[in-house]
Image (cartoon, rainbow, N blue to C red; front, top):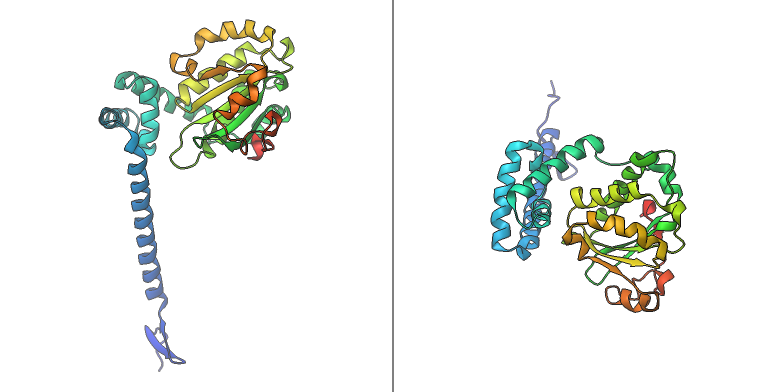
Length: 284
């Protein structure tokens, strides 16, 4: 009587391996691949943190140990995020930890599914007010926001806040390895009081500063009309000192030359004399 289970047999001069052996070999290969990927990721991580000072590295460890005891989900974030919160609070571990734990709590409640779906913010997307294209000389992705295209809609403040988070997540996803910041151009051309949304502006600022610290690399404000400056005077006191240093108002006659200081012409949006056509942020 022939045995139905054969571990090894000859088939046309080639050795056939049993299904059990194949699975074992596949598992071994997958384990090796996973180990290699983890090792590569570790190496990239260590290389990327080489620009940290000794003080930062020490405080990253201290802060991580502290926040992980307060919120286990902190184990899921990398040292880059820890470092961004530390830098936002001038390396004060206590203040940065409080800020970071607040972020984790906010993220769970405001983005319970881990991301914002375009269907949740359809009205804001339809306004066509944010675009992306290219990178600046430091490799930071570029975004352009048109203030005159923003209007309050039926979803109100909550809908706009979700749109801001959606946009920030899109920008972060476009950052190449080793890059943590983006460059923004706020175009105020055509802005009027119908576009004025003080609560929306202040909440967008709060989200950027409190939950995405050290993500903004530079903000150029262009074509700002006199009327806008009245609103700006109200907003300005709410901007933290680190963010204020990154904001530049650009004179119309020096627009292209100023932008070219940070962006190569090949990467500059075509509406400012460059070569890049803008892409709606939701399509990026």
